[in-house]
Image (cartoon, rainbow, N blue to C red; front, side, top):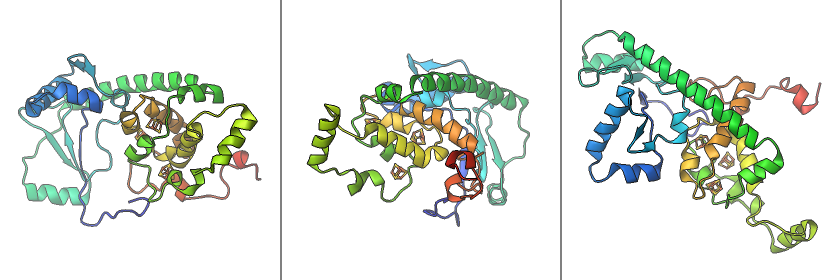
Amino acid sequence: VKLKQGRTENLVIIGIDCLGAFQNRDYFSWVGDDSEESSKKFYTGVLSGKEAAFDGIDLSPACQVCESPIPMGADMAIGLYGMDINNQILIQAESEEGEHLMTKLKLTDGEEPASRKKTVDKLVEERTVARDNMFTETLDATDNLEKLTVYLANCVNCYNCRVACPVCYCRECVFVTGVFDHEPSQYLRWADRKGAVKMPTDTVFYHITRLAHMSTACVGCGQCSNACPNDIPVMELFRSISQNTQKAFDYTPGQSIEDKPPLSVFKEEEFEEVVGIE
Ligand code: SF4
Ligand code: SF4
Ligand code: SF4
């Protein structure tokens, strides 16, 4: 929508409290043959606040540090945390469209129970601490080019992380154009200059470029890590860098459909200390 690849007419956004998710491979080993029973066990366990892990399997790393478990910017929001879901769930209209839909649904009026705010606040507080620890560890592990090269050493440039990323938005990505389709002689020149050349090339460059393109939009969903065949902690890197780019532009992705993406609203006078123009 923000990048004019979709429209909101005739669209009602319904958000729901997110209880988290397992990594793909954990999910399949945990769920077994009875997905309905497993889903019930998962919902009951998470909402009771007692289960941190299920049969030794924890939520994905992205979910463990997600401080936005309740929906933002939806027309209608469904609340589960702090509710006795066997008796009631919370449904709130958050826009005119949401109000309109609520009227049609003819639901019973009710109050948000005090237990909900308490439960959500506690969860957000715990997740924020975990998130900040992750930022510190990841930035320590990647704060110069040598360390970043080691962090990304197992990258094979399969681009799964880019394909899985919900905010890598380009219809034609620069990484699948001729720009990175080097002539064979280019590899020989690099090898000659450096004494050797690591294959595939451009792995660190790929991640730095992707960060430059979309870190202001990273929502920390973890799909990049989920899709990586070599278990590179891509989400950790992208979230840790993104917190700084998002802070610099005072922009929180996913918060409001009205907020313009920073790189689409160029201002001549900003970041003069960075670009060196006064
Ligand atoms: S964590 Fe960020 S970079 Fe990774 S897939 Fe999600 S939005 Fe994309
Ligand atoms: S890596 Fe850059 S060019 Fe490629 S899809 Fe993502 S944002 Fe677009
Ligand atoms: S999914 Fe993993 S191996 Fe593939 S490009 Fe991304 S970081 Fe590299």
